[in-house]
Length: 172
Image (tube, rainbow, N blue to C red; front, side, top):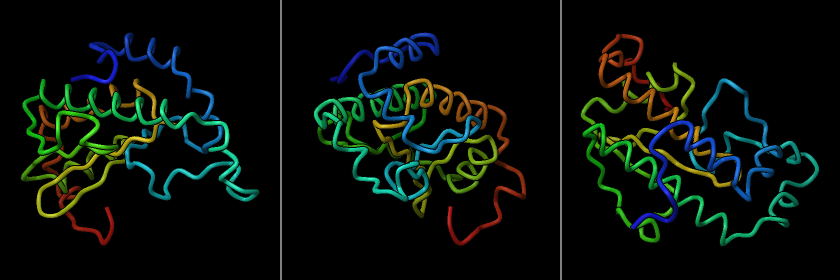
């Protein structure tokens, strides 16, 4: 059961972004243009307001809208993973899933490193889970679409199968 329309193209993802009532919140975060940040609410994406009081950002947010968008972003990720034949243990129902989607991959660590090299920040959980996290405040539908395009490229070309992506670091 999808929370909202699951886009089937980058153009549709951009249209959802244009109509997103939370789009303005993205401007409160420092996000480089060449980086797609899908690591959820960890400390990687800091708000510009962090020095003066980051909680002010949340005062104007409708949390129902935020939860709905988070589920919709997860729905999009799951749909794209399914289309790529990537198995996910994450619940299909957004209300049960929350803000993360996990993908089972034997070479998940190397794939997360390859995604990072392509500007997509995801997470790896041993032994074999790639985890994508979604923050409704700054993750756009087109970010998820583009990230899944990178995932598709990495899977189809096996670009993850390079020594630099297999070197295990302390943190993913």
